[in-house]
Amino acid sequence: MEQKLIQKQFQKLLFTQTMQESMQILQMPLLELKMLVEKEMQDNPLLEEDIQQNEQSTGVSGNIDEDSQPKELWVTKPLSLHEHLLQQLRMSSASSEDIVIGEEIIGNIDDDGYLKASAEEISQSLNADVQKVNSMIQFIQGFEPAGIGARDLKECLLIQLGIKGKKDTVCWKIAENYLELCGKKQYAQIAKLLGVPLDTVKAGIVEIGKLEPKPGKLYSVEPNPHYVIPDIYIKKIDNEYYVAGNAFDIPVLKVNTSYEAILKDKNSDKQTRDYIREKMRAANFLIKCIRERQKTIHKIVENLVKEQDEFIEKGRSYLKPLTLKKVAQAIGRHQSTISRAIENKYVETPAGIYAMKEFFSAGIPSANGHSDETQENTEHSATSVKMEIKNIIDTEEKAKPLSDQKLQKILGEKGINISRRTIAKYREELKILPSHLRKT
Image (cartoon, rainbow, N blue to C red):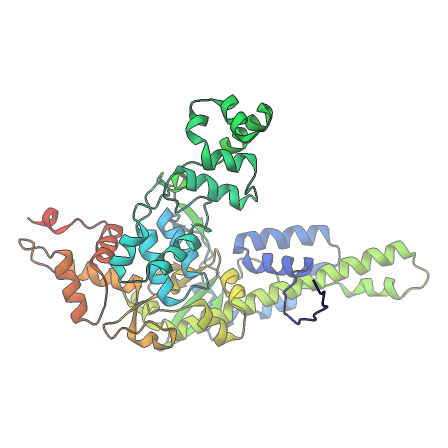
């Protein structure tokens, strides 16, 4: 066989240590950032508070009274399993069409984390290609928690082993072929069938024992509320929206320039100069990362004000379809940067406090069939559709409650193209009973 040397050009993003640190700071909630700044000020003698900048800086785009920016903690409810999966789906790079399929798949995952509908059933419900459904099932099986979306125990264990990089190992082969023998503790029989020592089989079973057979159970118990701090505020003054950052007592930092004299002093020893040089680099890097974090979050929220003005003013039922990709293009950032920047961040709006992730939602095609992102004006967000279903049911005749089929017809007349199965799923997520149980 003739060997040839072929030169190919390709792009590859390499994450350096500094890039990773910068991303971590971008992703930090406000309280973690405050703790980091306090620790760095203790550890780094070159870092100090910029008193003048602290007095001048309000972190406000516009004139907002500082007293109107509360710093107290706010109570929020942790995400359910389905909410956690939906957030991962909407933060992914999936197309609008795939997100609709993904939402249907997630709606059929039970509290233990298992998918209870076949690809064919989901395909028929959405009138979608079954291969696309299968592809999205595999895609969702890569979400957290590990093992989610499996059809049975074997698949659940194999997904987790695959994530751990243990494909084709002894524990993989046991999970794939000998779970029944494993349950009967016939380890010697398994060793014989695999042609490996008994101790190897026992070690593989120990590894399987570390896996989670019910990956959804961590979300099945009603969690305790926890506190959050708004990272940014959206205020309406004289019919205009203004965006303000929450300083949360985080000081504006600067580098103590008096140490520069030691660097310039030729009589100072090398070890001291190296120490100061390293601390100066670290201080400048931290200051740069914090400024970039603030700038990125501010730009994102300014764009959200533009795209989701009705949601900000009136609440969830007015949420429009919006993707990470669209915001990334609007503010000149990478999609992954937007994803990290909105992680664990909260915004206080005139309509209440929301996680920044809530401003993003997939589009459900309107009756004209458009589902492309360029046709967002013809789409409805999943959240707004849920609110529409709730509003219709709230105003129905109590003696003649509307069936899911009738809800589908009413929504269709409003230009919302949605399957009965999806209506049933949304109704269940809203904790609304079926029509025959709502009759009074």
